[in-house]
Length: 98
Image 1 (cartoon, helix red, strand yellow):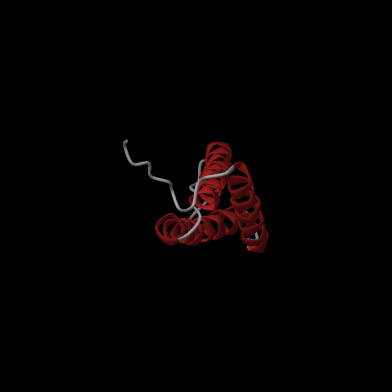
Image 2 (cartoon, rainbow, N blue to C red; image 1 turned 120 degrees about the horizontal axis):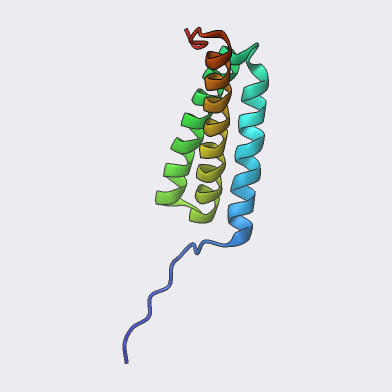
């Protein structure tokens, strides 16, 4: 008989949903601090970096489902910030982050 191995923290839909909701709230709060396109973008970059560090710790020592939700929403938040910066850049011809 072959041995069977079980993951100590299996990825569940509930864990992914919790991670996604927490990351969404985190990025929203940091995004509201910014006072314009540049402020929003820089705060989103900072908040996303901290969120991905937390996700990396969770992957190694905690719930991988929560880490997955955090990573997915953070990537989406960065994509939205990049689209806003690109749109402003295309409209004005001036790079908005400097």
